[in-house]
Amino acid sequence: MSDPAQLSEITLRVNGEDRRLTIDTRSSLLDVLREQLDLPGSKKGCDHGQCGACTVLLDGRRVNSCLVLAVARDGSEVTTIEGLGDGEQLHPVQRAFVEQEFQCGYCTPGQICSAVGMLSELAAGWPSAATPDLGATPELSEPEISERLSGNICRCGAYPGIVAAVKQAAG
Amino acid sequence: MRPFTYERAVDADAAVASGVAHAGNGGVRYLGGGTNLVDLMRLGVERPAHLIDVSRLGHDRIEPTDDGGLHIGAAVTNSELAADGLVRRDHPLLAEALLNGASGQLRNLATVGGNLLQRTRCSYFQEATKPCNKRTPGTGCPAREGEHRNLAILGHSPSCVATHPSDMAVALTAIGARVHVRGHEGERVIPMPGLHRLPEREPECDTVLEPTELITAVTLPAPGPGLRARYRKVRERSSFAFALVSVAALLTVEDGIVRDCRIALGGVAHAPWRAERGEGELRGAPATPEAFARAADAELAQAEPLRDNGYKVALARNLIVATLSELGA
Image (tube, rainbow over all chains, first blue to last red; front, side, top):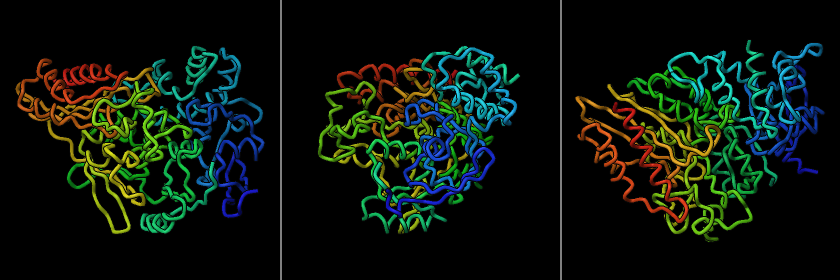
């Protein structure tokens, strides 16, 4: 059992629901989601921010939940793969991933959360290293998708299907 | 991970006061985005007993200054900074450097202050079971005779051959940014280059900061008229990798003559490397590939490559020449 000085009370709004939690200060957001909130959709791949399998939306932005200390995010809003759809219908990005090729599926929740975050970054006009002109509004292209999703590794190498799914979802 | 206590500071003075109060009790660290610190804590490289969260001190804005420059709060994220309209207009090489670093997810967490203070990715430093003078002073440097393909060619010492990993810091060094710091004796401003230091006999110190000093902001000067700038980075894959060599260059050419230039190199030294010898060679010279090559050679004459990283000298030379040629065309 942890020393009480290393425990903390926090509230997270997870997939639209307020969750009050007692956590160890060392807990990552990923471990809290998986171990305490029974949301195993976000995956632990590398636990070092290198693979992207743990990607969730934190206050609307995609992040590596393995590198986020939950204690530092009291009051934040989190959307995981479990919360993207409305319970009946899949999110358009989820539907596109189902329709396009993907393989083992381990990286897929992170890929999808990352793609959702990325599409809102693009809609906000954020540039990437693949944007030809930093002064212009970036447009979705295959090089843009590849660059913007470079934080998500797929060990099956199903990248062509992932790019196609993102293109399809973006319409 | 070693257990630690956590607090969220309400302002910079409170953060620094708490930092000083906890400094003797087994180590204290300021927490920004956590992308490097949390990872190093998990690896056992960093073992603070207390964390002070400095991400909500109100240092989260980018504002124009009276002299035409920019004031950037230390808690601004890398992605917000790269997307900012004024940064993209006035300092596009800073946006380029940021966008060529890390991944979208990491840039959404990582802060300006934390980016400047990130630690080397030398594999011996990051592996807590290995000797490393930077992590545990006096234990030696296995990298000097071991795996050093990605490590320093300039300014290293017998005690450390690590490189500084930041792209952003290389751009800020070329731009001539100023780093605003709060300590228990008040504020001070550190020009770049000048924040990061060479390893010499104290590789455990990456910067000139005291352990409890807190970066609060970075300011940029107004861009000069007629100035062209570019950040270019060479790495082992085209995205989400640290630089083998990078260059941030600013060039002002009038009537075919280089009136001003500033060049900084990344991936080659313990600090972002301002190429002052090369710049001196270039000022007043014709803006030609031959002159750019002479400048690169003048700078790199002081390189001391290790057994397996001599390729970086040629790479740096070619990257400097290519980048300046593009800017001077």
